[in-house]
Image 1 (cartoon, rainbow, N blue to C red):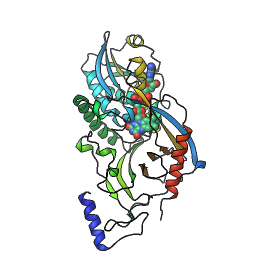
Image 2 (cartoon, rainbow, N blue to C red; image 1 turned 120 degrees about the horizontal axis):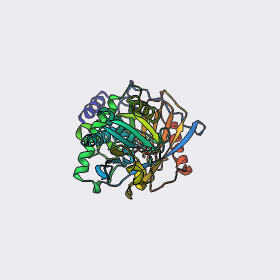
Image 3 (cartoon, rainbow, N blue to C red; image 1 turned 90 degrees about the vertical axis):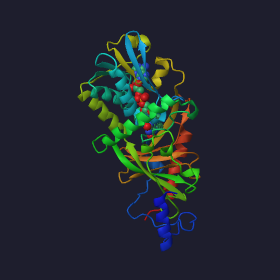
Amino acid sequence: MDRRMLIKRSALGLLGLGLAGCATPRAGLVTALDPTRRLVRVRASWDRVIRTTVGLRPYRPSGFVLRTSKLDDKTVIQNYGHGGSGMSLSWGTGEIAANMALEQGGRSAAVLGCGVVGLTTARQLQRRGFDVTIYAMSVPPDTTSNMSLASWTPTSGLVEADLRTTAWDEQFRKAATIAYRDLQLLVGRGYGISWLEGYSLNRSGPGDAAVSVPMRSPLLPGTLRTGATVLGPGEHPFPTPYVTRRSSLRIEPSIYLDALVRDVRMAGGTIVIRKFDSLRDIAELEELVVVNCTGLGSRELFGDDEITPVKGQLTHLMPQPEVGYSTFGSAMPTAGGFVHMQPRSDGIALGGTSVEGDWSMDVDEEARRRIVDAHVDLFSRMRTR
Ligand SMILES: Cc1cc2nc3c(=O)[nH]c(=O)nc-3n(C[C@H](O)[C@H](O)[C@H](O)COP(=O)(O)OP(=O)(O)OC[C@H]3O[C@@H](n4cnc5c(N)ncnc54)[C@H](O)[C@@H]3O)c2cc1C
């Protein structure tokens, strides 16, 4: 239990404050609901469902690839394989890739791919004086990046612990640090990025593994491990005994990716719709520096058998601008696994699927039902005042 929480709980315990709560209260753990936070109930119901989207996360068990190689007279810089963390990390891996490009002669670069990794890499190159052309077979809104939930999740579905190397960890920490700063600097500037409080729903309280959340990952540099507050029975409106509250960055993919496309163009960049079938196609490009940001496309194009899809889907409810928080966890008995809710201006995104090795872009009806039903149940049992 952190010191602040201990003090708060002891003080309120001494004052004898408590509420008959949503779960069994423990002596000294019950405090008043925070009056400064009014959490509006999500109107979760089947008649508010507006669409379901599917995306394939580009996952490599040994983590993203960030290195330079040669293809004839060209320098090819690889920047792909960000798994469930690409929306979070791309400014960082893009900056490292752009600095690798600076070590080559010439200031003209081709970027392959127009998802979040390609677009942010293009911007990092432009900031360093490069003329950039993006080549891609699909552009927003038709990329995996557009199908993302897109919270700040820098370690989610990114790498297997036993396959990490010291050098990779170093690249990761550098990338995460750069990306966390760059995303923060875009808040409030029309990029669809904002701070949002998230509530992890837990059965158990402090000291239990159930309260640990991704931000505590030992992989993250200490400076990026943001604090969290654990709320006990009676301190929150959710139907689990405990919740962990933490502020995090939320990205709205459709706004963000369109803004990046605009920025690339405004800085003189060009976007060419083109599919690459082989390394020969790449070798024929006129640019001497090529940065590969094709995500899952790298499997065929560069023969990387390690990269594999992790299928995810989101079901969206009608927008509710008054909802200003997210929820996630597997503690609800009806959830049947991990589920999450995140509001955006274009809808309320509900998710909770990760299927490795599944290339199908079809909606999984069973998963859709489980996720929507879990949220209907969750919000029907949320207390409001
Ligand atoms: C449901 C879901 C939830 C997610 N949630 C989060 C989250 O909360 N936080 C987070 O950080 N990340 C999240 N992700 C992961 C994130 O979306 C990905 O890591 C990221 O979008 C990968 O970006 P990318 O640019 O590498 O790939 P893409 O967006 O797939 O872009 C690849 C580009 O390469 C092009 N391309 C590929 N092959 C070729 C070829 N042969 N020739 C020409 N062009 C080619 C494509 O057309 C496209 O333009 C989520 C993903 C999903 C599906």
